[in-house]
Amino acid sequence: GAGVSQSPSNKVTEKGKDVELRCDPISGHTALYWYRQRLGQGLEFLIYFQGNSAPDKSGLPSDRFSAERTGESVSTLTIQRTQQEDSAVYLCASSLVGRAGGGDTQYFGPGTRLTVL
Amino acid sequence: GEDVEQSLFLSVREGDSSVINCTYTDSSSTYLYWYKQEPGAGLQLLTYIFSNMDMKQDQRLTVLLNKKDKHLSLRIADTQTGDSAIYFCAESPYNQAGTALIFGKGTTLSVSS
Image (cartoon, rainbow over all chains, first blue to last red; front, side, top):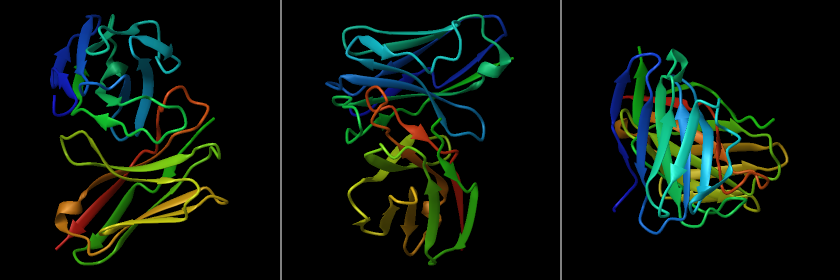
């Protein structure tokens, strides 16, 4: 595709429910990233995929958060038993090779705004 | 731990220059980035600089890097109302898996006509 796409663009859910957020990276990009942006805050790194494997899950805030990636393409971020503090914009990015140390531009999607009531 | 600091707000008049400052902490960061976020939109990469450079110019944008002080700045010449947005500074520490970026909280630039 032309860019990174995410769905849904907005999600309102009740506390305790599970949600799934989807990211379609740019075709051919092997690296995929999930970030969270709380209101008035910078982006917080959650997880990184190189191909289908996730070598770095250190940013996931709790075991309620999980992510998977299939076919070196689509990724889903799942939040179980959502809490109000999970309310944020969840941003996905992809890059060509995910080379350590930078120099591999990350392209961001428009994000999913999650509101937990 | 890593932390990227930015001032939160900057207000300028149309036609003036804007300077947004950032300090970072990880000297292993080989690339430093500036992203722009407009309301309701994702992040758009504006420019980046490699750590062995002091300056990079791209049309109205000038990036200055002081590696000794771990200070990065973004200068926007002839600022326009369309430049109003949140600007994020980000670093990519070498010891991070992949190229996961560490972002500042963003500087909201407000341009008045």
